[in-house]
Image (tube, rainbow, N blue to C red; front, side, top):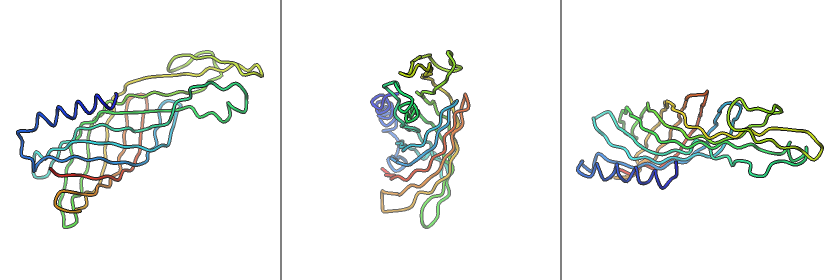
Length: 204
């Protein structure tokens, strides 16, 4: 999903909660690094996310947001030689809309939390095969200058996934907190992602 669409969704959520107490609302933006696996592809890349949160109970938050789980570029120009084929990196991108609940425990330094959630992940990727058919995705055949035939399998899929995580929000001041967290995502078609994030939380 495009970032503009996500911003509109989050903006709508923000507007719908305007009647709620501002002290219960917060926003988070985080960056980090993750490893994703899907079918025969795997990638290691930077990741980021942002979310709006609402404290609906003394020990519970609800968060809604957007994440880029993998940002590895897709291959545009097909290899023409054996050397270029060996150097080619077949990409994987994964973006998600997330809804989760966070259980938290407060202390002198901040808040320890654990996360349980669901996400819809939009995945685009590529993988190479010497077969003329793809087990997954659309077929894009090509031939090297030396005569070898290959097939590039390209896919664009949406999968449902669950997410669990744990983290800590450190107090920085009246409104700001430093967030550190790790999370694990597991979804359909053997999609998985493990990532660590460092971010900033602002309490409205």
